[in-house]
Length: 76
Image (cartoon, rainbow, N blue to C red):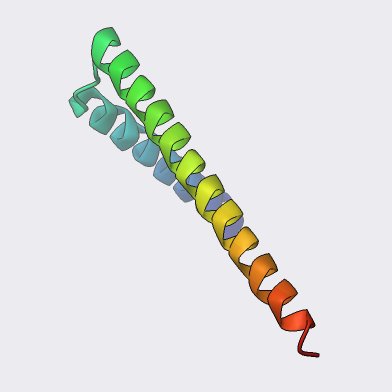
């Protein structure tokens, strides 16, 4: 008997939860197509720029450390 009531409470709770999720999703101001495309393009541009900067920094630091360690080899 207690298990049946627990299952009913679980179903009732799930129904209330998804009902509230649906109600909240109706309140969301979804972007129009143009805004979505512009935002997506902006994200891609930022990713490309930051990736390029990270690659340049990585290559520069790698060259700097190789030069530094190579110059130390003659002393050891």
